[in-house]
Image (cartoon, rainbow, N blue to C red; front, top):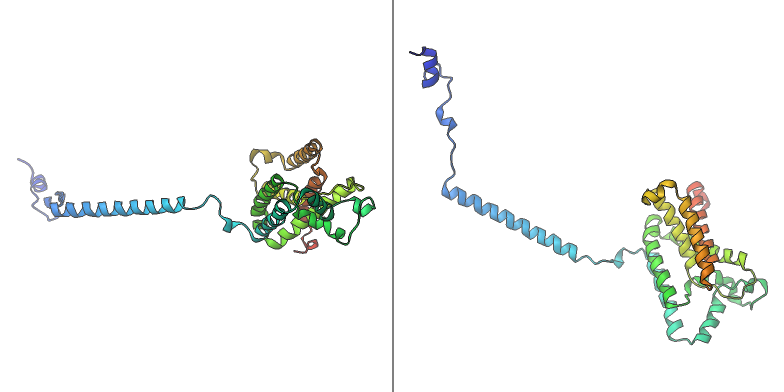
Length: 268
């Protein structure tokens, strides 16, 4: 015979602290409740599928290139490149076109007495930027302007972008003049300006650690490599004004250095 304490343990009688066996019963949902839960689950899954489909459609509708994200000055310059180029190559014959190149392109000899001088010659360190020598020249510079503008103008704003662009273009012409002061061949194109923007972009990317393993050794190896590429390709290309490319690139490096070390020297 079991002790009474043990008996109380098993039969639930005694001191009132024993748990009711009904607490251990697992209640199963009714058919109506299971049907309601199933419908709620299907409704939730349907809502998720609809949301996923909506988001997928929205992502697929985003264009590969959004012109609205291109900064203002960059858009203006690309439009001006095209606006100048179209009439030159659609409405003007080659002889007259070359006359425009020599009049509005940068000719070093015009400043040293080896080529004709006109009232607008003083403007040519700027006007030569807007003229391009071929459709491929326009396409390359337009594309590079778009890429450099998206990065540089977004970082610095339109006022500094204007300053960098035109100063680098003028420095590119000045560097060409320093090496070829008596040349009568016109220099045309925005390559000096764009090379300067590329230099600034390169330094910005290095400062932000965006050059990957290549940038671990510092930015100077890349700078020297690019200087070598510009010089060699220019010399092999014949009619490429590599001096203007190089001058613009070095000008961009110098402007970025001044902006970082002596920001008050810059107008913006």
